[in-house]
Length: 117
Image (cartoon, rainbow, N blue to C red; front, side):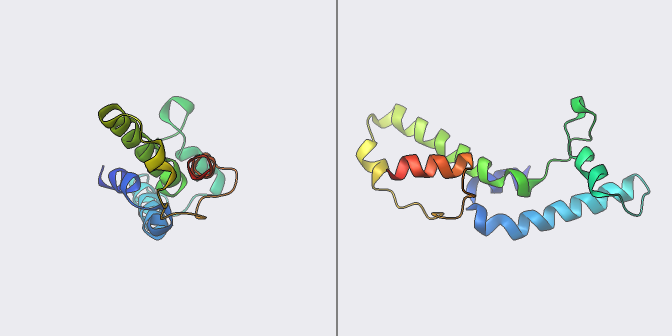
């Protein structure tokens, strides 16, 4: 979908408000479809689970935007390495525009730290 592409292409800190808005619209639409006025947090959490795990597969863009962005960046880097060879010096000199925006301890934060070292 377009929002998934956007999550892979836009810095997570810039995408966060739009992702939150998208998730809210998704929830409202879901509630209209099932003719329900509101559901609790636990029920919504279950709705966001994959279908194979008893949910409805309603993925939260806000919850995946960091990993989507980093995985896209990492995949692009792999392609560049395959095409252009060793880019170690280039990667070490990249100034990451999202420095400090990843939650501490997250995979995104760890990857950023590794690339910045």
